[in-house]
Length: 169
Image 1 (cartoon, rainbow, N blue to C red):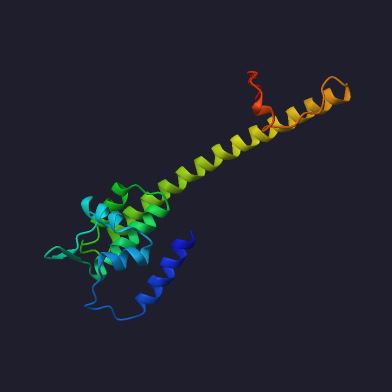
Image 2: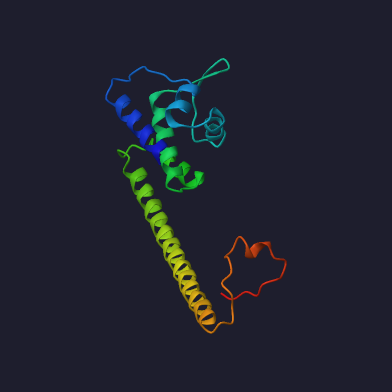
């Protein structure tokens, strides 16, 4: 998260300048976005980036940098590379990015739904575990009151014993 904030701040500073004619090396982009050069080459292999080549050197233009910004943001919110590629593929249409924006919105809404479902599942698991802990703690307290069980250390000490335990959740 901090890395994303740092790269966003760096992008904002750079965006306020005139970047016409400015180019970037793979190393510069890697440092700016907190990526490895290998990751950038991977995105290139997947058809997400297409830098200019000057001999063996990759030369990235502001358009490549903008695409990398979208790739990083997409990955940060959990989009698959295929989804990011589909969004990027609509960039060059002559509709002022309307199609690209509509495709992005549809993908973002699906991702939001997926994350909300995951949140519901996680909340249910947390509730189940918390209820189980409360029930087991009450059971232990009741047993201690009846004097049937000595107070024993939890987890780490119990894990050293070789006796198999029954699942009680």
